[in-house]
Length: 99
Length: 271
Image 1: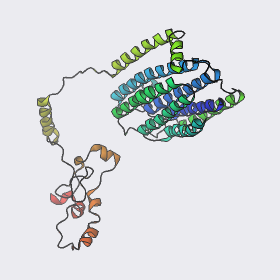
Image 2: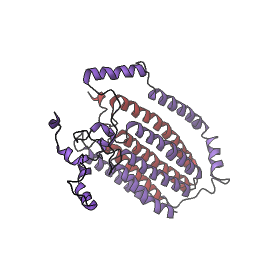
Image 3: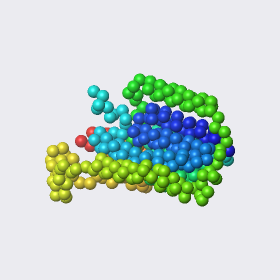
Image 4: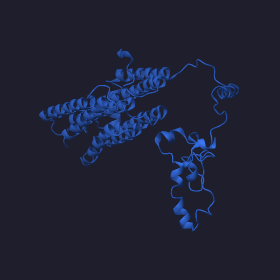
């Protein structure tokens, strides 16, 4: 069983997540792309756990999942608050700090 | 490796779909495909605990949260195509592809070798071995996680909470407000008209017809109008001649058709 395909898949998913964060305008979709990047890094961690024969990678992936759950809760609450005051979920509309 | 070669193209396709679909709900469903495929890959990589956690936490909790927020924000909230920064989309794509190329070229320089396997590391199975690590070496990080989760929960409650600054309107206030609107702007105080129900269509996307034959816009749901799926009354009446022919009825002896003739009439004729 080779390690490389898993790592390359992880890199591809991470890249797609990166492009999504830069390209998409809807704040919720941007957030989903962040989740995609976290998932891609998790895949690399789990692969390395098996490649190196110890479980530290799996523990790290577990902690990433916990932090991702907390991050999603707070992030979506922030998006909700912005939507409630500005009636828009677009990242372009929240530009008050610019001027 | 069979699971990998089946799932990897699927995952890349679904992830690319997230970049291109217009609607956020579709992006969420494609993300679910990626996450469930990842869970299967975890199972193939000797991580049954993470397989379960991935499905329960990611697809179960996080994606449901995404869908809840999408429902609250409005399903029709799709991306705007206007670029605030000029050529940002193209530049971002180029930068992303350059990043991906760099990572893959960098990975190609490294030789990882074959996998050692986890048989040595987890003699009594995956979950006891992970528990050993979590509650001995990583116990402090584990405890800190609980603080993080409590902070996140309280933060979400604070952010989502809204103080009521005006008193809640009761039935009497609502009725008084409706009459005030009627006096000020002439807005009808009663309920909105029901959608039109005709012999050929009994769906709610058919607008009711006014006595002069024009469609009443308030009789169909605002959401249907925004989606552009409201049927027009003249469109319903368009093939009335063919129906009459098939029934063997001549237009003279047929009962008066509201809609076809009435839709052409202008409202001014009544005045």
